[in-house]
Image (cartoon, rainbow, N blue to C red; front, side):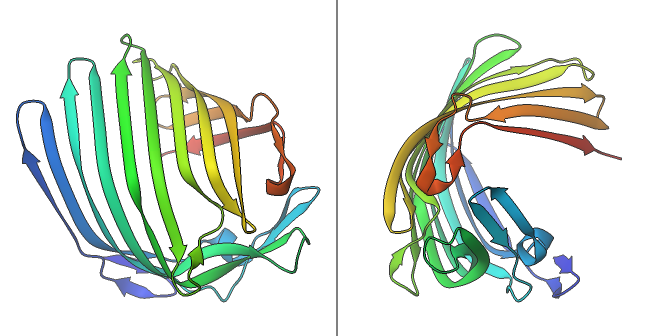
Length: 242
């Protein structure tokens, strides 16, 4: 059960099953309902992300509800592991955004009456040393606006990611990651786009209480004007846990 100030108590049942096939392999299946209230940003944000793009919140948004099913295999031997899974989501009132007018650069959050999101995910991980790990993932995604009989925008049909991560056992140490993401058939404004980004992030930890993150998206400065990708973007954040 969740409680949300605008919706009261919400029941979100879910069930899962894990079967140990052998010493190295597991089979998993999960089914459940989902609920997500619109965030403060989705309701009230008013922000320019670049000189050409502005996005506004919508206080009249409805909450998302969904039915979710996924199943997959996991395999682990030595320093290498892999996962392969299939998922299917049926969503009512999917929270998305769309452009106001044509070529205006102004977007607003909206609800999609009915949406279907299904696909396949694959992942492989390998431990290089006690501190270094490498991970590769692939996702095939078929997202459709069922009510409009069209593909959902702002989503990639094929996504491939390869990352190298570093982690110290010292709770006051550092963690970091360098990763590349390749997106093919990213659907936006009735067109498909393909591009690759390289990103880097570094975290400094002060015990379990504080984590400072610094990073850089799009390290090589790739530009995709139609998607408002204007080159490199710095980011920083501080997490505080009590």
